[in-house]
Image (cartoon, rainbow, N blue to C red; front, side, top):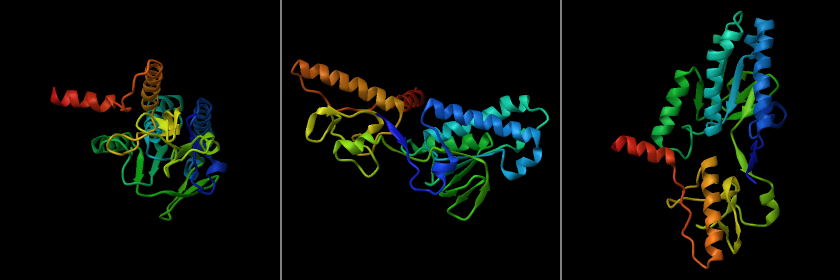
Length: 253
């Protein structure tokens, strides 16, 4: 059943920020970005009021990818479409409450993501969180106020509300507790996969909430069911991060 956005109770998020979990959400964000440029093109003075400042909350995979995509959209597409507008004044601000991007990824990937975003002109702010969101501004917990009319909330997710109705144990991080074979404790007949499952690796760290994890766990569970029908045991689930593995092959050459 996946996950849904969580605003962590931050004032104004539900009213003024854009979620980014579905295709419909993405279409809405894209339309809003284009509308902001059209408004600034009609009245350039709006740029001073934050019309072309886009704040992205959350430095996870979704937030990082979105910031990179917006930066490319501005410089490679919209700069050509809005020739009478100083598109260089458009700004993307990424706000992440921890001291690094891409939690759960390797330190090298975290550092490279920050460098790459900054090279593209993204203002990366680490170790600070959003205290409130208004119709025309964002206030950070360090007192900084950022004028903006567009905030995309990619800062947090929680397990689908379905998890709350099942009566199964959940972790503080969110998601149903599962064993090494992705079954719910005390319920060997119930498999939980994807973002709904709080699956962990051999090191005890939770797997990232990414599509490859869900896809691999789905294939694993399908094989488990097949093995059960033949009376054969199953080995524990292990997620294979193909990106890291490929990187290791390239390095060791």
